Length: 411
Image 1 (cartoon, rainbow, N blue to C red):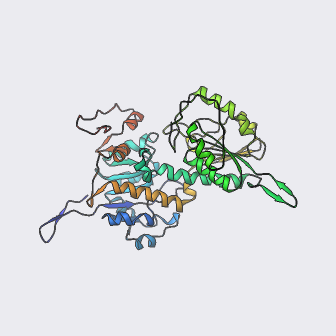
Image 2 (tube, one colour; image 1 turned 30 degrees about the vertical axis):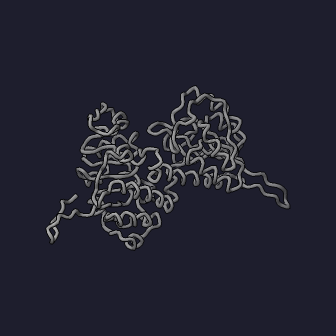
Image 3 (cartoon, rainbow, N blue to C red; image 1 turned 120 degrees about the horizontal axis):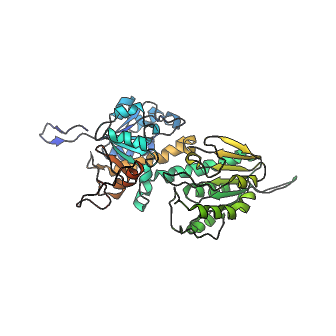
């Protein structure tokens, strides 16, 4: 960031902080980190926004839409010259990305980085001296809900999962009474009632299906039933009445998973569609559907596995592929929000704009480590990985906090 300059009246003026939005580079990624509708608040706060040419085109946002809202359009170099660079998937998730060379010491990088799994990427960014904020690490507290990209994108994924299932299922979803007879409604079973699961439940109900759902957290029963679905109760001692989050579950023991699978087998066998949503941050997704359970489903049934990119909740899932086993179609769904890029980008962009707002104070870029949202989402700074869980993931020893630092700062 440039130094302040003297104004004609002798006062020192600070340059406006700049926010760069590069075009995404990950294969199949059609979202953009900032939509035109998310810009006004940032511009009012004094942020200068630079959009790479064509960055929003795949999501349905032409350069003219950004220009109309006050952004500048430039090349990739101009976008990466900004004080803050925001991406949907940081550097496309590639630790060898040529964009690494564009990063500089002290520059702020914001987006989804999967820091507990993509440790090589984190290490590479840290080596450049950039400050990385991974939005997956935003704490699950009330004031941070407006920055929760996991929830906003899971909402889109849950909706699209049902659309995929409806297209693949050789039946219609709703109950229909016709002159040719009555058509029974499809039966949908949603495994996991976080944000994606609840979105799937609501969408399947809107399409007219009979919906059942299960989650290890019995506390979500009321939410499931409020959407018109039946909550499947299993006599399991999981200790997770309040565990997990709207986006990620807590890991269960293998014994608990085994009992869970045994008790759910009957419900799975009676379902036309099963949608699985269970993920554990930084770890392989738990196996909820075994090959034996899939064999018990009727031919023509459909499984949509939203945890495919973490190995899958179904034992037979192949990421980014649709396979058929015994007449059952298993859809290994990967990055579904990118398939609905317009609204996924709208919500993601609002999350980004709200987060950037935390870093702007009196028109200047200010990283306030006393703010728990800022502190807990920071992965690296000044050439050092500072987030304790990420340090563990990369095999680094714990970094002691100084006595005068706010609780939780890892320095």
